[in-house]
Amino acid sequence: MRLIRGLHNLKRWAERSDNPLANGCVATIGNFDGIHRGHQVIIDQVRDRAHQLGVPSVVMVFEPQPREFFGGADAPPRLMRFREKVEMLLSHDVDIVVCLQFRSRLRNLSAMDFIEQVLMEGLNVQHLVVGDDFRFGCDRRGDFRLLQQVGAERGFEVEHTQTIRVGGERISSTRLRQALGENRLADAHELLGRPYSLSGRVVYGKALGRELGVPTANILLSGRKPPLRGVYVVTVEMPGGHVERGLANIGMRPTVNGQYPSLEVHLLDFSANLYGRRLRVTFLYHLRDEVKFDSVDELEKRIHEDINQGRDWLANNRPVPTNVER
Image 1 (tube, rainbow, N blue to C red):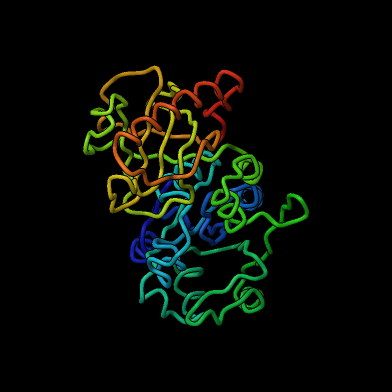
Image 2 (tube, rainbow, N blue to C red):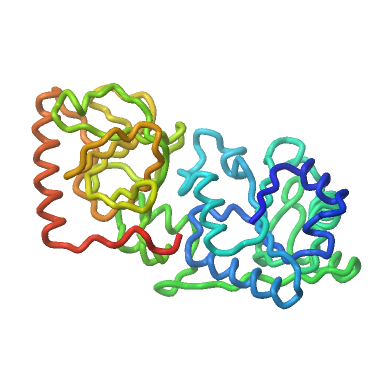
């Protein structure tokens, strides 16, 4: 799989003799936040059509996501970071991921400029798969009908995405975000087709957990607002695929006046230096909400109660394997 970042790089590839898009492509466009089962159906749809036409499959995404650009701190929590998204698209055999920087320059492109510069000059698109509610261009004036009209004139086809429903409702990132925010992990699992997980690199923290006799791995969230908050039973996948069991706290750490979201993981039966390693944390069961305690002593007592409850849950439940398709 190839990753192309930025419209300028997309245009540079178009000028090269070894341009992978020289013969066209089948593409789709969206945020693909979470890559839930609905997204997976779209990816399969794109990949199957690309195979029929003998051209690459392309997924185009944006950084930041448009709602983050417009909403800033009020934007909804992100379900996965960009690296996780690219890794998961790779696991679904997408040939090319194009990531465009969503800033004023792109936001101010007219609908026709977007079609000309991005879809035709950049992607050389043969076949486009988008939702019939897809909007693009300055002030969102471009729509599915315009794409069909221009495609008929300029030689590319436009197909609307297939829809998958669970419980009679369409699967969406918004629905998934709501399930996670309400700690309905089983519902989130059904929407994703896998248990929800987050990954990141272990960084140095304040070592408070070690002082309390409960060392934790502090995983960098890069300041992003997580869709979950509270204490959870988890499994943790190490580099190389080895899996350990543990407890995780994700949130603002109000007892110690935390200033930014953090993910802290205590491994139950494992002790090693994990600094600098990338871990994947899979959330299995919600133990409790995040609470501000009156003292660190109260916090310490509750942490040990959490550990005992977590061990009890693991003794009576079989954790879902973390090496499912991502």
